[in-house]
Length: 91
Image (tube, rainbow, N blue to C red; front, side, top):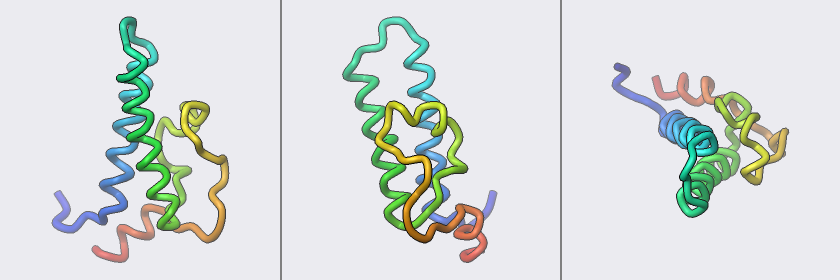
């Protein structure tokens, strides 16, 4: 395991996990609207944060498929950096 992981990678990973949970909840009977909305809000916060610091969120898994649930644009505005570029800076 790497000794130094860039915080943006951690946030991106947690956002991916949350989006995967949303995908599961959408296919599960008995999911409450509150439970689903809570996960959507968490994922939205992760996407918004990554975009606010200039990270290109195009590489986040599940995002294209679930973009209709989140407030996300298909192309980020302004200058962006890939997650790999940010990780190599601190390694």
